[in-house]
Image 1 (cartoon, one colour):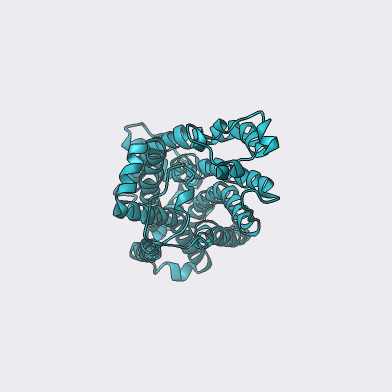
Image 2 (cartoon, helix red, strand yellow):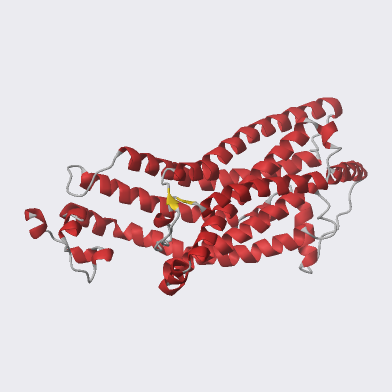
Length: 383
């Protein structure tokens, strides 16, 4: 208490204690050293909060616009027959739902107390939001996993893949979506971590059973399991592409890649971007979970101050990286436009926007290559 008496910062620097009669419990929870750290760390907290309010709002607005444009292109008559575009369309829809229901609602609840009170007064609405937040996050990443597995099957077993169709892709998307809906419904009965949202809103009061350990399941299913699968399968795909390319060069002395290789490259671009955006968040989340489980001090106990300093750092570093993770749901349009493997997407986009496309007069050798490529693309479209 003596140190607190002469502390350079009072309890008013702590937001939750402003205008409140400070009790002995508050004094134990916020000792002088912790208050000094909080004031020094506050600029980073302000940055993270700004990113998760203004930054997220920009991502949501731009993402919904670009995802809508992407879906319009992917569902054009000459595009929608491809099984690949079915996966990409499903991914676009789920990304848009994540932007709307998860991120936009999260910002509104965090920035507008009346909006959050609406959820807190309605347990059914709060429960529904908890279910769909879990669901749409899972759908976006596991559609990428399903698409990755599909490409591996096509590359490894090209003869069997010819018998596949858009119907099979639709069945795969439906199956994955159905399984994830069933998994997400567990949140009707069980609650785990809703009181620690990165958007800072107060959690709803609930009669659900609180099982904090279930957060390990959430983190694994959202980050580590799909990330490990995607990285492992991508390595196999890259090796298979190089192997196939070398074999074709030996037989035909041609370096023209197959359409299936080009489709695999856009998948690699999408999945690699996902891994790069989610990996920092997954690492910090995991460290935070481990730290909170092995280090547990109560206010006034020796070591409590150091424990809380690390706990606060991890929480706001997680919030910081969560902002970049959100880009995953709005960035695919740019990947399709800039990738050298998505010429058909760019051509249809220009046509839809009324822009002129260049007509190139091809040499006979190039024409034969294009003709062969178009035949292969017809096969891929049937896959």
